[in-house]
Length: 471
Image (cartoon, rainbow, N blue to C red):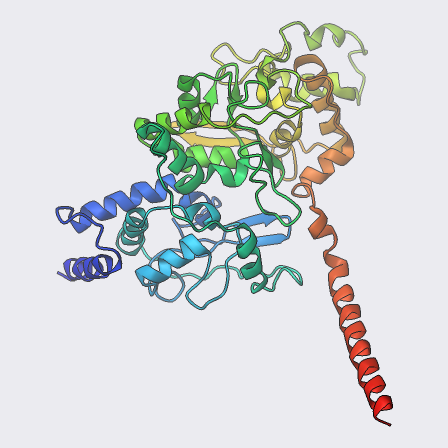
């Protein structure tokens, strides 16, 4: 009875917002729809701590260029979550990045994409989070970015520059499938948030949509329709397979944030939505990187067997012989990826050639796969590559060792024009490249202090000058 009463009250709130929910849909149907919307929006990936956290209870650390941002509890807990949110407050938080207390959210929450979500989807998602999710009564760590990034009021100015709050409008000249894909890629699914490069102020470079960009230590590659830099040489079926399973033979394997997207979101989307996303990407504006000469999945061949140059090179009782890229590859990689880099017969351990991780003009994904491993669950299949960074149970490798392995792989199986240094590995081990804005952070407070002094001095000078004139 209490549940039915809650459903009735929620129905009244929803009908008061826009009245768009069809009369024949029951509240339970609305909750079920909301679960699908929340899945497409991939709320689980950020708001559930993979280290044993309860669903949607937050406390997941997002390492942004400005500092660590902890995600919030979005269960219907009235004390720690969003149980007291009205529909209007929920909508404003999701689509405008503003909490009920008026404080601004950081764009680590992709409200710049969610702003295009429809009223119907927001209503359904609100119903799901209020009545379809179990409340978790636990607090989350507060986000405490360094000054001046801790001044959330500054986000209001950022939003004026970079938040497009216009509702999604279907293009009447395009097909229904194209429009659905556009809505998912640039709205609910927020693919554009990771796959579009960022400028100095961390706003999206809208002139290069879906052209790729760094996400912490990982690189979200170009997914525009360009056949060289993007996914133009992928078939629609290959794109659907990749989103559904996290792998496509001769192309790519999902790791890092993309593995999370596949695990928590994409594998559960209906085939029609996956095909709509693929169709839209195949027909998106192509963006070419001038540095790319051929497609990333076209590099390498099965020509080099690492063991041929190693066997018998040292006496049988020699020690400390695992030095250099070839020996390190043989000791740490060849047992799974095979001495010739071809991977296992069933490609559960993928080939290192015809592989975008080794053929991209950016080696970040190759390095990060070694540092952080690969971990994704698709259906009943758990794909796991152990990490070789901190806390590895296989072997913790140094920056120089990972650079040596990376260069061996790139030279023999991938893009040989790319070379990795120990510094490159250290940057990704520390969480990824630091933006110029973050580099300037230590100087911002002193600069603001000097600015205040200059303004005060100017005011004093003007006051003294006016006073002297009166004399």
